[in-house]
Picture 1: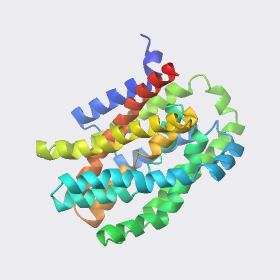
Picture 2: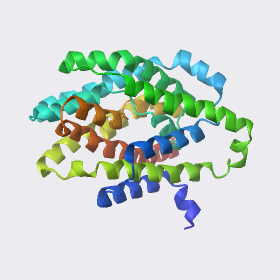
Picture 3: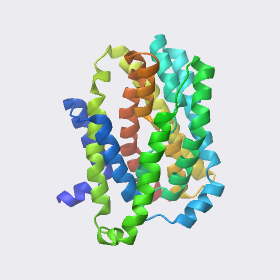
Length: 301
């Protein structure tokens, strides 16, 4: 198999990056490099989008992403957490993970998984604008914690607004046309380094008591793989367009783990950040899983 064939296989790239990250703990300036790599991926991912289609999706498709992020995902996280987790710091961590918005990388992952990128971008914009009010409100209601949303506003600016503006400029320069035949491989390679850095920097979360890891991991798997699988096949059963169904699945499962880790540490303790740190691995790993599931579903259709 040629190197280019391997680079074009998103599931293979994600799984290899996960394994290397967990086994080695490789990372370099995790926060700064994550912003740089993800910003580059976002720029490449939105270069081909249709601005008029974003307006259409924005009118029709932004309510459901907000609903999925702030009702379905929190419920499927908090119900099992309160049933099986006794450590109060871990419970706080699960609550924080529930109230943060979806990951901005969802737009890029939607591109990799052949979802609807316009829907992903308009939905993410709606989620993050809603999060300015919903995240502090929910955190206050559930934990009595005061959350500053400056980090959310920074994310909106650096990872949504700037990449979108930059992508329009690069399209005018003809870059989209020049890299059209290699863009998937370029994005996958960037994803390799992104995942390696994120997982490597959170590797220590896996070196606690084995029974605690298993319980936290089981809840994370339920929220990502379990809920996402149900959402996807339910959407297809309801005749939701295939690309839309894939993107809605990501909204229902893919949380901003980096923001959750930062908030948990700032508001509570390093222990409170452990659920979000472990969840990051399963969130990213689920993309490889969905890549396989979506391909199999497409063959059956």
